[in-house]
Image 1 (cartoon, rainbow, N blue to C red):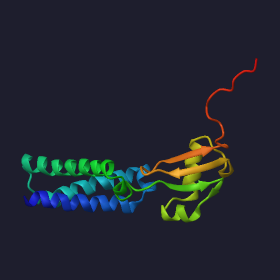
Image 2: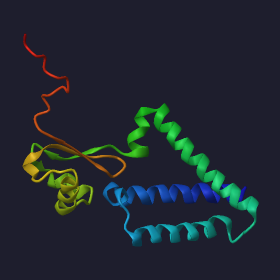
Image 3: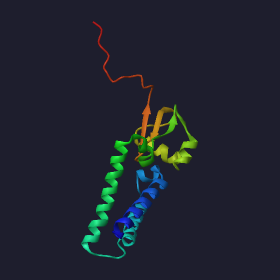
Image 4: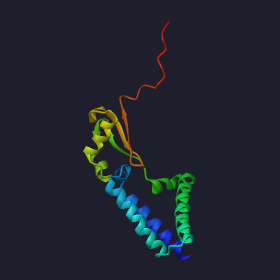
Length: 158
């Protein structure tokens, strides 16, 4: 039973760490960051299982993590008021061509990184961006133009 409690405590710690790192950092991991997280996983395993290498302990620890992940997902779906706490909220980082410096600073996202993401979407200048939203998964959604088009073709007069 101690293993279950240790797994719950470590899961909560890792959840807090990933929230503290910030969404921008989690959107795309560098090779070093990936290796760091894999290493952290090994260290966590040692802390959870106290060097118990039995299959039962491994299955129990992974099972607790999986159950807690499903529980957080269910809580986010079942109680919408808990969703911002569990998954975060999207953040507007550009509005009408103007980067929101305070929002970028809060999300630890540089103007260079923002513009690099915009260029990958074929956007050349901030002025072309009507709205940019940093999503909860770390990706940035860009909206350009006036937004007046509904997508329906115009009817031909006749």
